[in-house]
Length: 392
Ligand code: CMC
Image 1: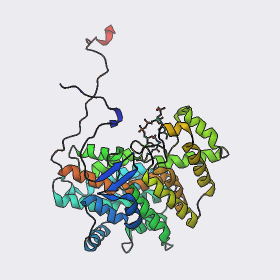
Image 2: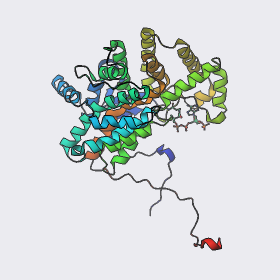
Image 3: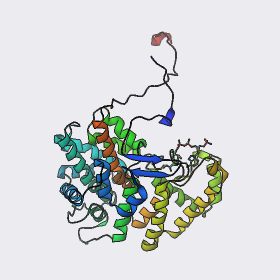
Image 4: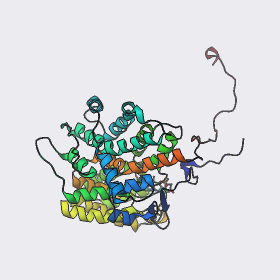
């Protein structure tokens, strides 16, 4: 047996090669398939970016229309799957509801589970992209006790999601185009981030040749954690807590620096970005625009800005190269849009879906793929002899 190298958290270990997303953490660069995130955020749409991530090139207009049309035809959930939602407690967090429903898709679509059949993989891809927004909206409806709305396929994906979330059967609802555009852009910014915790999970599960639904359901559970996608919810809870204490930013920062009760400045720091997170720079601008238009919680935005300014001028954060990440301002935008805090991580999942799909597909096609099976360094007891219970 050769030497194994211990690398907790895979800080220094590449698990695959990939042609999807490029990150330069020192320079603050993020590109999908070669295209800078700033250009995609400004000019592309979430569906077009999804196509780019999954198929590798920007679609022609005909390709994009065809892709959009295929997704449109799969937005409905099976009526039996709809009944799943009745079984969860009313106060269930929508993330485990989301992952459970996605896991259940492999029971409804047994005709698209073969990872090596291109046509089946394509069907699963379209089904997931089409159905996840419907599942997410139903998870929300369940939590507020309102009736589910069927998708309206005359609408775009993001618009339809907003309508299914905030609409009521008795009241026609058409989302503000500013809100639709902003959410579409936030989805683009979240769409992929190479080998983060949830994407690595999707790959690890998929490396056993588990189907796409099973692999992505696992990815959703990985995203639920507060150090990953759950950070956007944690940021808002942190800001609410500071407001509750009279907006005292200094006391909070002191607690973070003293590592009291493991308190962290949520929405700060990143494993890869050590100068700034290019997504955060775009989102900060969006936050100003959206909050200006929709009227957000100015007090909370003020606390966030004061906190950012305070942290960026403090040695603790400077020395450790801790900067605002993608999640620092998203929560404020989501709240201004009307989403409850518990839905924030679900929104991250909707955005990250095309990235997970792209990685799963890339891995299945890669001849170098082997089942993921890390080694360990054993630190337990040396060999010892069994003693019967009566003699212990
Ligand atoms: N607040 C206070 N201290 C921090 C923070 C923070 N947010 N992040 C890192 N540190 C400290 C950490 O305690 C350590 O200090 P010391 O050397 O004294 O022990 C040092 O900085 C290095 O941190 P690390 O934990 O080794 O860094 P990591 O690469 O393992 O963790 C991270 C990256 C994102 C998990 C971490 O920065 C963190 O917990 N941030 C807060 C949660 C968060 O915002 N997560 C969202 C990440 S972006 C969206 C996504 O992709 O999921």
